[in-house]
Image (cartoon, rainbow, N blue to C red; front, side, top):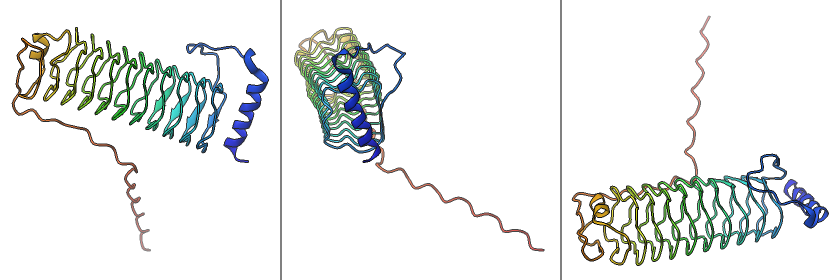
Length: 288
């Protein structure tokens, strides 16, 4: 039996012994040590409803695993694989998700308030009704994800990739989206009240009924964006942004066309790091 299997066996026994009497710990509790560490493979395993508070997943492979309604508050996910994992209604408040792959995962109804997820991958994930309030997610990748009715209120998401997402009724109030890519996304009925969209790219995205009251659009690019039915958009905001002849604005607003604007998209990092250079050859000893 490998190390991961032994750890999982111990987890099941501990859970059975503790049962419902085990106390629920709030995310801010600093006295709870990390109890579980996973570094192996557990593909398609079922840990639904398990208590994994402060668990550490480092270099672990949980692709396709089922963790529905699992308690993973304060858990640490470092460089791990959770592709197509089932995490609906799970509690991940205060978790760390650095460089972990959650593409195609199901987070519907999950609680992720205050997570730290720099460069985490949520491509094509299901995040409907998920809560990311106050989360720190610089450069996180949500391309093609379903964000319907999710909440990112107050989240820090500079340079996030939101290309071709579906974000109907999504809450981005007070979110920091500086330099983010919202290209070709659907944001109908979303709220950007007080959000920072400076230098963001809204190219070809749709915003029917979206609320932009108090949003910062300084140097944002609105080329081809459909804002014709957006709410709360003012001429001052439009004047701070760059539009083109394809930009659609609410009646009465005049676009500021910027000539020579170039769209720059950051390329993905290579999957494998470059080969390290060979060490220098040692000098020959002097001849006698």
